[in-house]
Length: 276
Length: 320
Image (cartoon, rainbow over all chains, first blue to last red; front, side, top):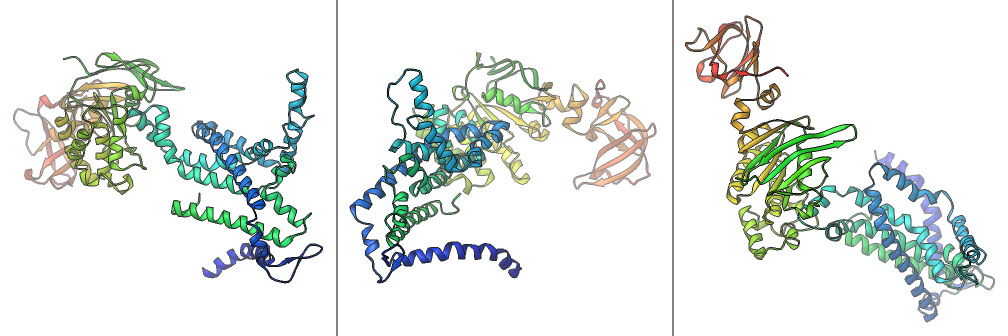
């Protein structure tokens, strides 16, 4: 029995060790080294990279990343909750609606983000339509700003909010809502006092599933923000390419990961059990 | 006395299925009224129409003479004890009981809560969460949560079915006593004939979405209108076109005076502790079961006997 367990675990464990744990260890060592002249790393060991994280310039970028991720998460929650509630009560059609929620996953995020660029740019569908209708004279600056980044993030991560919310709402006994109505609560009160409190675990899971990837998002801010709004993902990428400062890039990555782990730990501790 | 609840030609149709057809009945104030029937007979449908969870296809529900048609559950002064109890799992016992008082405020709300906690012996458990309670306690919280609102009518959807059999009989007695004490009209849904017979002032027997018979437990058991009613309320021996309850069927080695009798042979005898169930086959080919007191001695298979009964115990019913 034990041997079978070892055999079953071994492939995944080896894969994780080689492709996740080892690179992470390398990255951790890099954070303590000095940048090489042409990229790469060199001696001597130093804490300089970690200290640089507290430079107001980078703290500002971190704060901006946080606010973008928080805004995207809040929007996803506000949009996703009614949707998940609707799907959970859609009867036999709910499987169709769930499939529609997951449909975007059939295409890569890169392609979908490009599609948004085609929609939003000055000569994109939205601006040309509005121009043709005579509603505007100049193309609206829809692309390459904070709002475009937010739109892209909400669009990309909404399903990660809807799915855990749906799974908690779907398991909710319909008799509980009926009981609330029976005791005199109007629909909004039933939502506020019964449905939302009981959906809290799904909300926490959805918030983490959206917030964490949004915090480190690179693709969406880079393409839809046009490099104007530097977020932490872009900053990390820059360190490994243009800036050729691998140790600092490594420190940024590790710092971000530490923040994410603390958030996860708080969540697990609060829930006292599994994440989902 | 004016009826408290009137169901008037109440019907509920689903595509390809009639759940309830043309049900008309009155429930009197202060009554313990049961809707009895097998699963799918329309009893739960009726409860849901009275509570307002579903809308009738036709007909009317009236409470104190006022139509409830078009009123949402939260606008009806009726309350439901759910089969699963449907306690709010994130609230304590006390918070569950206080839930409805926010929407139907009573001047003496806190006093009512205390009274309900005392009456249902929940005082010591008021800070517990529902998952920390036993089945019987959950049921009492569900009752308290509804009773604290002092509804005109309390709907109970098989409230005893989730309890284990030993507890069920005890709670049954408590429920009847509680109803007498609070004086609230109970509309009790059950598939258990014993519950309906022992608890109710009157019983409506439903079958395939229709009212089969309405009457006192006594009438339903002893004077059933139909063969279905007779069989649903207890075992029946069918002899020459009439029915006879096993406890009204006697066995004797000689024909008894003033009783009708048929010669028969004992087929088997089953000891049940307080009595025997003796199966006999009459000379004209009917299989009958007699409930025989232990004191009347044992009957052996193959023994010739006379099946005897009083004419008054014959239940003459048209075949279905």
